[in-house]
Each structure stands twice: as structure tokens, then as C-alpha cells.
Amino acid sequence: MKKIFFMLTMLCLLMVGIATPSAYADFPERPVGLVVLDYGRNIDTAFYKDIKAPVRWAYHFPYYKIVENDAMSDEVARAVNQKGAKVTPELMQALANQNKVDVLVLAQIYETSEEIVPRMFDRFGGPSMLVRVTCFADLYCYRVDKNKLLKKRLRDRYLTDNNAYEKPQDTVKWQLSKLVNTMEGRPIIGGDN
Picture 1 (spheres, rainbow, N blue to C red):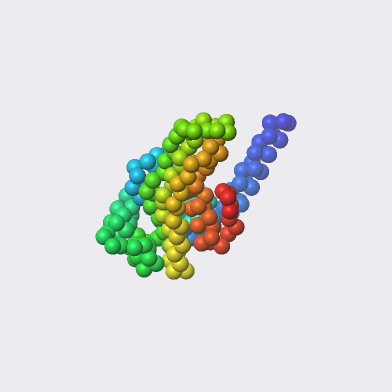
Picture 2 (tube, rainbow, N blue to C red; picture 1 turned 120 degrees about the vertical axis):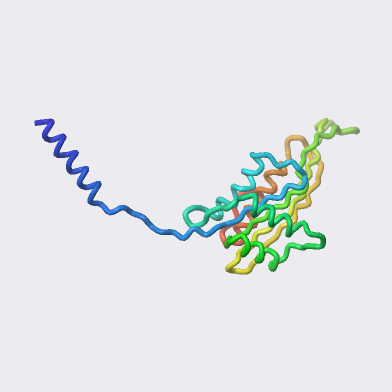
């Protein structure tokens, strides 16, 4: 009796599984180009993932697909690094159309460093070590259908206590997050607004 009941149950489950139509929605994946140009030669895999994360948060699957390839990076680098070239909406539109992307995010990282500096003369008994933080970068986000270019220039160099500073990688990450969320009209998340 138990075997017959088990087989009937399995047969019903199998019929329900076959009879139900599969839920498939065809979402148009809009391509998003992400180009990171490293002029200081200090971007490692973890830093690159930190740069990619805010772009992934703003332009997520299934509506967008992040495109990263060397050919696109080379074309953008060649166009941006030409003598006298400035990043303008016209240049970004030409690059986006050439690479067939709807949104083009460009991060030019010039220098990101943290350097421990000993404190020389301390009359008040503060910490004996300080940190010199440097973060130089240019961030751009261009959207083709709005013909809108947003840019942010990061020029941070400061000396602070050893325990009370924001890493330059986090500064780039949260400023890029602010830029892409502003482009999309979403609330600003993370970092110091």
C-alpha cells in the first residue's frame, strides 16, 4: 500500500512539473562598458573588484551586462591619452558608439598610496606614527540615451593618525558609487555623503 501511494505521489509531482509552463522573461541586456586605466601601476585584483562593485550595484543583471575587454580598454586609452585630448560628452559618445555600449564608466587612477611617516616633534604625547594618504583619480560616467556625462576629480593628499583614515581604494570605490547612483537617479549609498 505504501509503495502504491509513493508511486502515485511521484507520478502526480512529475505531471505537475511537466504541465507547468516555464517562467522565462526576455530582458534586454543593455551593455555597460567599464574601463579602468591605471597610470600608477598600483591596482591589484582586490582594488579592481572594489572599483567594479559600485558599477555592478547600479547596473545589475538582468537589465545590464558589464562588458570588460582589452580591445575596448585599448581604444579608450588611445583616445583619452592623445595629446591635448579632453574627456568630453562628444568623445565619450563616440567611444560608447564605437564599442556598442549604452553606459560607459571610465576610471583613470593616477596614484593611490598610504605611507607611514614618523612624527618628529610631539609635545602633547599623541601617536608616534602618522599616515600620509594620497588618492589622485578621475572618474567618468556617460550614458548614451541621456547624452549625459558626470565626472569627479579626486585630489586627496593628507596626513592623519594611524588609525583614523580612509584607505584610498575605499575613497575611489565610494566616489564611483556616488557618481553612478547620481547618474541613475538613485539614493547615494555608502561612504560619507
